[in-house]
Image 1 (spheres, rainbow, N blue to C red):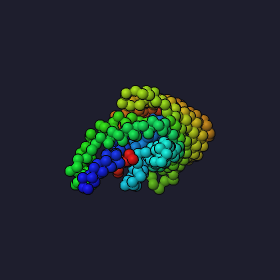
Image 2 (image 1 turned 90 degrees about the vertical axis):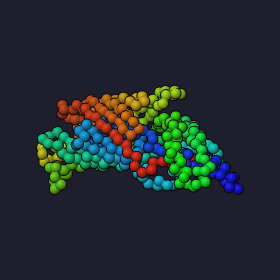
Image 3 (image 1 turned 120 degrees about the vertical axis):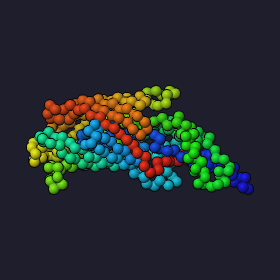
Image 4 (image 1 turned 45 degrees about the vertical axis):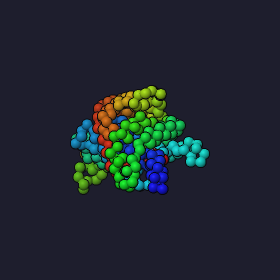
Length: 361
């Protein structure tokens, strides 16, 4: 009986247990910014939809001591021990246990909801000194559609690869702690097995919504009056794989973005004390090419409202490793004056706090 139990346990663990944990922290951070930074207008790109697999992300711009944004994704910090916390559920592509039909949940992107906070010591036209500005932002994915057959095949391949990790009978007999320790020791082998299945599979289409609220103290003092800025925007992204069927370690993509924004801007000033609010509607788009660790893009946004202006910026991003990337932007920023040259660089750091592992079931 004991021998039979061990055999059953081996089968169970090989296909449904520890060996099928997927550590999402192994996936590459791709955030170029945060909604809190975008609202402040201090970011290389104003059009992006992040794929955030990190519980905590930090963004800093080229004036590193004067600008910082922190982004938190609650999904990776709460409900970590739930049994239904699966990779399939996170992606939203699952096999029906009865009909075996591959189904897709277009609202699964809601689990990527994140909150961001930012500080910028910012220059404004009409003012002789910088103003300390603070903002908060929130972002989520309303709709997300994958090539569900491709995602399912990739998930099955990952599960089969992980099933090659078997637990010795002696370890099984020692219990759960020994089994977990065994898998921790085998982590490098596990990572090597799943590496072929960790190519980025982007949604064919996704729709994000974001909003932010920001304030500044007019005289850089707590007792001073404040000015405010509010914005809300939608961003859609359509992605096409450029190297379908290739043996390359990464998927190369062409991405097309469309964005629409509404902004109430109270940061306008003609002197040191008098501020006024302007209202804008922005509409624009972006094209982006991803080739492995590097990506090039161009974005254009037209602004109409209290003042009319436009943003025309070329962007570049370089991935150092799965946690750190650099981005830059150069071009023409929104402004009603001749001083409209934008040159900005940023560093983005994803920190894996909490347990970001999900199961393949």
